[in-house]
Length: 76
Image (cartoon, rainbow, N blue to C red):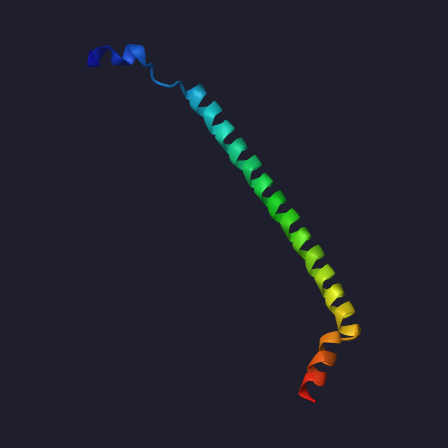
């Protein structure tokens, strides 16, 4: 049976190996592009969110702190 195996599963041709290598390289390239794009979008989202939080913090610092009124009245 083993002697018939080469006839059942022929050895890959050099052209098929080249085609597969090109496919593999292309697939890896587009996968890398996708991952970098996702990372770039995440960085943009993070920068935008961080800037919003900074603005909200500055706004909160300018507001009157109502809780401090309760703390002062409870110490009296």
